[in-house]
Length: 76
View 1 (cartoon, rainbow, N blue to C red):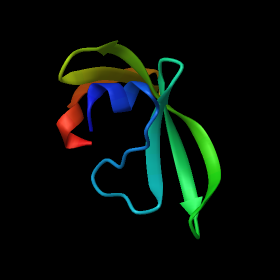
View 2: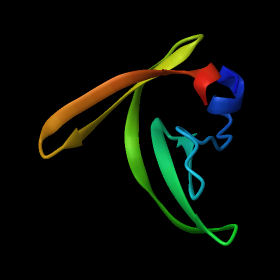
View 3: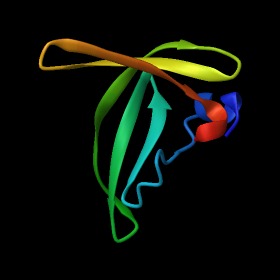
View 4: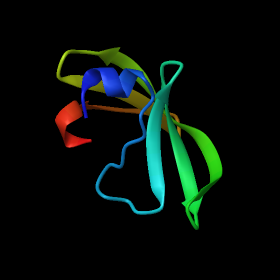
């Protein structure tokens, strides 16, 4: 995936999850759950902190603890 495809909201899978895809929208990663090829649910998954030329950084909170990382566009 390219940075522009990411910014345009193209869906991507991470770690080859067959029933879940993600996409970028309004500075956040949205998780879309599929059932029989149709979107069943969507929910906020993580916040996007910054977008570079090769990767983006994200963060979220789990039980009050901040979890963060970076993902290369080529890995999507």
